[in-house]
Amino acid sequence: MCASVATRAPDDAAGASRLEKKACAMAIDDSSSSSFFAPWPDRLRHSAIILLAAGLALCGLVLLADLSLARAMAVFVCIAAAALVPWRLHHVAASRDDVRAVSPVESAAVSAIVAGMPDPAVLLDRAGRVIHLNAAAAQLAPARRKNELAQFALRSPEIITALREAIATTEPRRATYLDQVPVDRWMELIITPVPVPTLFGGTEKCMLMTFHDQTPLRRVEEMRADFVANASHELRTPLAALSGFIDTLQGPAKEDAKARERFLGIMHTQATRMARLIDDLLSLSRVELSAHVRPDACVDIVPIIRQVADGLEPLAGERQVAIEIELPETPVTIAGDREELLRLFENLIENALKYGASGGRVIVSLIQATSGEGAPEVRIMVRDFGPGIAPEHLPRLTERFYRVDVGDSRAQGGTGLGLSLVKHILNRHRGRLLIESVPKNGAVFTACFPQTKSPSAS
Ligand code: ADP
Image (cartoon, rainbow, N blue to C red; front, side, top):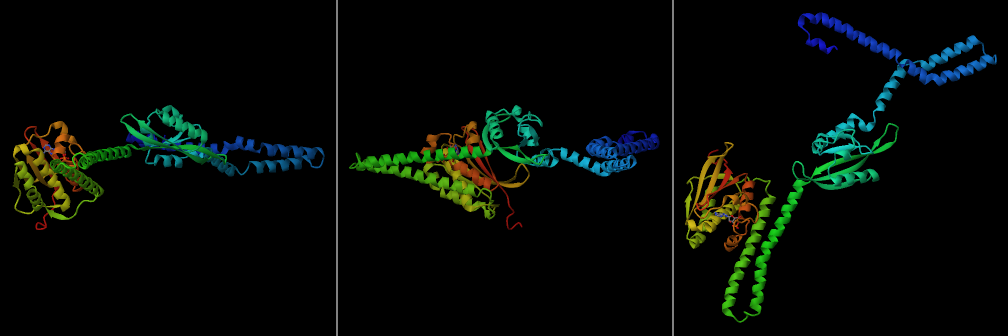
C-alpha cells in the first residue's frame, strides 16, 4: 500500500503521501493493538488448567471456612494475573513456536545446499516426495516438481527400482541408465539416505538423489577398447605371417635355398612393419601424455623441413617423384619440439610420396599468414598431384587406424597412425591441420602453427 504512492501524479503526491502515512500509521497501530489483544484467547487457553485448579482449591477452602471469600478472591486475582502475565514472554514463546513449526529439512539452508550442488540433485522425504531440487535436476526431468512423488517424473525403470529399494531399506543405492532425450547420455544415479532432525527431536531418513553424467567417461572407455582391439589386430597379422614362415622354413622349405631367400625377405618386411607400428604407438602415447604442456623452446622450422625432405630423397627417387622446396631464406621461428616436428613433416611428406607418387612431384612450401582470429601463423603446405582423396574420407583421416584403402596402406608399409600422430602433435603445438583434396587432382595437407617473434625481431 505504501509503495503505490510512487506511481501517482506529482501534485497529488504530497496529500497522497500524508494519507498513505496515516494509513500506514493506522496499520502499525492495528498490528500493535492486535499483537496486544490477539494472544488473549491463547493465553486463557494455556492458563485454563491453572485457573481451574486454583479456583477449585480456593472454593474448597472457602467452603471449609478456612478462608474468607474476599481473601480467596484476592488470591485468585493474583494467581490469574501471574498465569496471564507477562504478555511479552508469551508473545516471544509463540513466535519461537512459529519458527519451529517449519520442519528443519524444509528450511532455507537445506534448500540452498541442494541448489548449490554442481550435479542434478533432488532431496526426497521417506515417502519419495520431492522436498528440494536444484535447477540442474529440474532441467534433467522437467516433470519433477516440489511436493510431488518423484516416481511420477521418472522415465527409467532402473531409477524407479533403485529408488523403491532405497526407500524400503534406507540404504544407499546406485543405478546406471541411458537417458535418450534430448540426446543419448549415460547417467549414474546415486541415492544416499540422509538422517534429518524432525520437529519433535527425532530423526527422519530422507533420500538424496544425485545424477552424474558418465557419457564422456564411457566415450573414452569405448575409444580405448577400440584402440586396443585395433592395435592387437594390426600386430597379430604380421606376427601370424612370421610364425607361418618360420614353420615353413623349419619344415618343407628347409633345404630350399631360393624359397628361404624369398621368405626371409617377406619376414623382414613384416618385422619392420611391426617395429614401425610399435614405434608409432609409442610416439602417439608420448604426445598424448604431454598434450597439455605446450612446447616452449623457440625453433627455426626451415632447417627442420629441409632435413626431412633430404632424408626422404631416397624414397622419392625410388618412387620417381621430385620434391620441390619453396622455403624462405630467413629463419621462421615457432614454439616447438624439434623431434615432434621432424616426425610431423616426415609423415606428411612421406604420405605425399607414397600415395601421390603418380603425380610425379611434391611441393613443400612455407607461408606466413593470419588465422581466422587475426593471429599471425606459419603455414607449411605439402602438395602432391596424385589421385587425391574422396571428400567423404576427409573428416576421418586423422582417426587412429583409419585408411582410405587398407590394402594400399599396408602395401606401402603404412600403420594408419601417421595422420593421427600429426593431429596430436599439432594440437600440442596449439596448431591445426587443414586437408584439401580434389579427387584426381592431388591433395594439400597444411600444418598451421601460431607464430612466435623471432629472437632477432624482439
Ligand atoms: P598410413 O600409415 O596408412 O599412411 P596415415 O594416417 O598416414 O596412415 O594416413 C591415413 C590414410 O590417409 C592413408 O592410409 C591414405 O589412405 C590416406 N592418405 C594420406 N595421405 C594421403 C595423400 N597424400 N594422398 C592420398 N591419400 C592419402
